[in-house]
Image 1: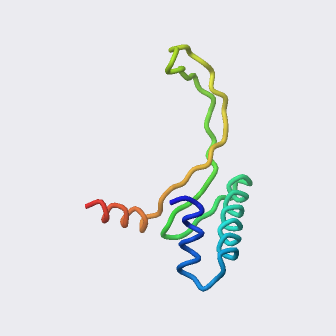
Image 2: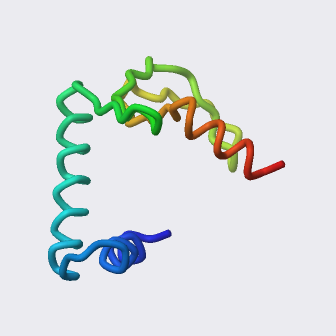
Image 3: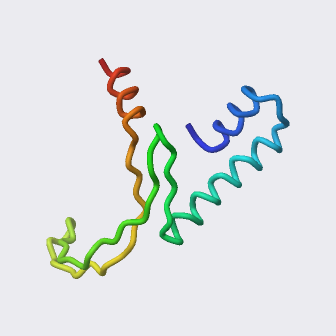
Length: 94
């Protein structure tokens, strides 16, 4: 599902205008982004948690050339699924 599909789905499911649905999605995504960047993260019970993780510097290998290269330390966004979401995903794949 793309962002436009999500907006259309919210528009179809709720009694709000398409522009209100778009604004809602934009605000939610911006607030999640701001919280991850600040290091606070976002936890939605039953769904999952969005956080910022720190990755240490390491030695990497370019798969094309085989040449070793140094990968700098960095922060990356992460998502950990909640138990309810994991259970639903596992149940649907059976």
